[in-house]
Length: 298
Image (cartoon, rainbow, N blue to C red):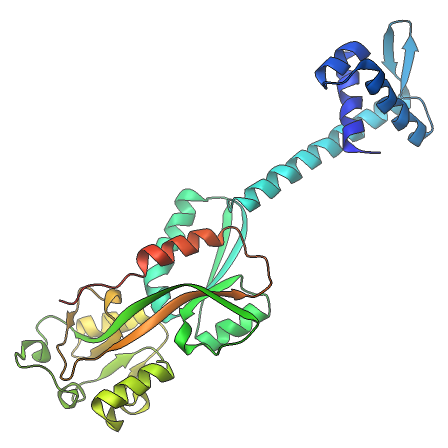
């Protein structure tokens, strides 16, 4: 029994004529007759009474027709649902966001889903890279967007859509350090609270190379959390100095440090290798490429 045979049954019952049904399904009349006969043979009972040129459903034929309509409808809905999933228009998308990507992507991503893909169910998790990687491997996430420099390279992880962004020290407008004309030393910065998300070993190495052991994040960072947006607000409302990607806080003033800080974050999309990616992930990839762009120095 096939869906094609059930569709032939439905068409024949609706048209009441082999010739009209054959025309409707683009078959010859003998081919349609063979299809109906094969279905009757499988069910071991007639589905139609042939009365001269007229046909009428038998009681079993009527029952079969009712079931066939449900089965064909379910098949059509399954096909349409699969097409929507393939287009990324429905289903579920589970994304993990690190601190920097979370600050810059979460609201635009939710807005895009609400406006462009209202049938898509999206779940966003915010955590550190290690916890997000555990969730990804446990199949609790479809992908994560993190600073890939904080991620341990592993054969089961795939990294793509990498965007590099510049990190810097920033303060509120009117901050005492913002008024210095000759450049700001790390010693001057260290007199104030320093706020930052957890930093990668590579960034820690750059800080030490530029400013000495006192600049190791474990020593100098006094305000640390995964939520970059909260740290930006703290820097905006106090004398705290924010160490973060420049583009995350365009309203803050970038300090001209001596020597200049040449540190970057490399944000990328991480998925499980050899696993079929969720079609809706294309929306995240587009936003990463569009929004995780460096801001010019002020």
